[in-house]
Image (cartoon, rainbow, N blue to C red; front, side, top):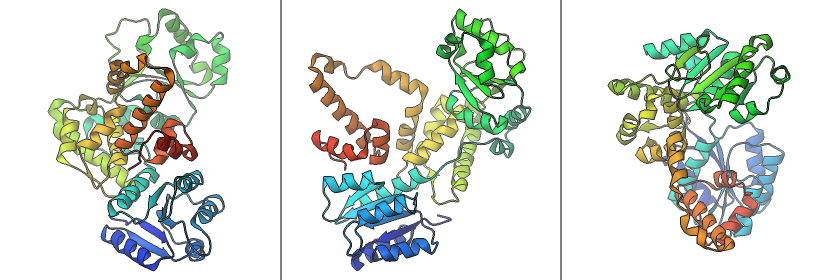
Length: 412
């Protein structure tokens, strides 16, 4: 690690403080130690920087839950706080997560468990900025240079050819510095008056996805909207993952600038690997090298064989997600397997398989309980933290532990 992650350990037991500190230092972290809440608050008020807190619940002056509430509500600490206790219960864990703790670890502390949770917390707390136009500007690949030159023209009408559409929005915002609206077929159908609609979107950017799916009525509305974009100083952007030039539909593309992000081919495998490593370094630099990661050959072999990764935006998203999933300094093929779950074709395949056919013959309550168990077991098996599981499931962490207990699921 170029810049070591610093962890504040708050525990009244000297033996635990020191042993935890020694373990973390051996693993490449730096530590700050506090034997009670007062000492911890002084460290914070003195301006010491840290990236994560390990906080014991049972302390003599102020208990950990009370200190947790104070740190989150008064000091507005954004760094992850992991609670520790040798006498914890489900209710204690619920109380901790309800008040902003990242996770809860029982004593005696397992080395594997604490390092795993710390790594997850650090990975999730790091904000990885999306690929920028400035990143494109600094590359030496001729196709990327061409993309950059096309982007900076700031044409009012663009076609972006990319498999991963979500990635374009931050770059469009950086380019045009305007509000961006995603307009789909359903929204177009609801437009009664184009001028009223466009007046509300004045000086913005409209993004149209999947226009090949538009029916004739929707295309007619689109053409009216498109003809009035200049009048309202609106940029129009079409995002598609296929070549539109050979498609037979009624939209004139002559005034659009085409930017194709599929810049690598099977003959460019070396270039693909080179830019995968550059993208990785870009993200590590963006978080001041607080984490160290490198690709294993198994990961590189996976992206070589994935045709989607020859799209620069998609490659960027795979690497970004792999950084989050990776539980060690080495990003492997298993991290790739987690990352591709955002792949459009993967999602369609899962949807079409219908793995819950056997539930249809059961009564509703039993089927629902079984589905919930399968659902939570899937996410826990895939090492999703309680924080993420709460966000994805829509269940407050106050109730999530209770739900897992009712279903007989252990969060190992």
